[in-house]
Length: 306
Ligand code: G3H
Ligand code: 13P
Ligand code: NA
Ligand code: ZN
Image 1 (spheres, protein in one colour):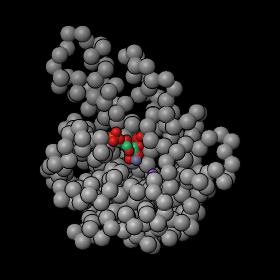
Image 2 (image 1 turned 180 degrees about the horizontal axis):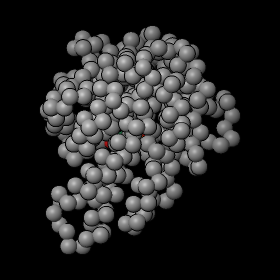
Image 3 (image 1 turned 30 degrees about the horizontal axis):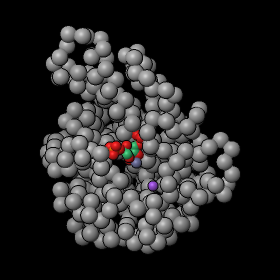
């Protein structure tokens, strides 16, 4: 059934596993997420971005996810991903979301606190959980000096003040991950020492954005159908695994789903010039989505936690 974000994540941090938060835009992705979660007895977050809202409509996605979630036995949170402002958060609350993110992290600290606090008051008044972000998501360059890192990664002491001043339920932090399929050269550097310092001071669940792995099997499938990807890199599985005992309880994945869905569609289109039944294209995409979603639940230790 539909569940509150806080209930899912408090348990995850307490028991030392993480819950993936997958972006959806459509029926097939939502089916792949919920069927896999149900089969693996895993709690899950389904999140709606600004791009998803513009593509499919907030009400359409909300109604689809809430109806489908009501018919599975595992807990499902419907989450607003990177809510731009107070107005967006109110729209999600009205549409029945059980978790919202206000992302005012690009503003100076005091303004971030002010915006976030307003959203917490509104969301908590109707019992909905809130995520906010401190720091800026950006890859860490090879020979970057400490002061330069401090300029955009989350400061542990500031994190304590932010959580106390805002009353949020979970905190998104910046430790070197970044959005998209190009997260840096080689193995992107993740500041695990900083994460440890944050986890020692902040007891609410922590959130890691930009956590797609860009797995080899998906790069191979894309390239086999002629896709021109350049040199994509994701976060290594080992870095995701290592972050979880240090308080990371919610892990956002979008890019890997985009790759999986598109790989399946491309395979049918390129491999069978006579096929024009869209269900065959999307069906293959959904099959690869399920595969990559299963891998995420296994990586994060979510299997059997529902
Ligand atoms: O955080 C960003 C997500 O990957 C969604 O991006 O707004 O293009 O759907 P989008
Ligand atoms: P990826 O681009 O690494 O999948 O990150 C998605 C994300 O953080 C959405 O909020
Ligand atoms: Na940010
Ligand atoms: Zn994000």
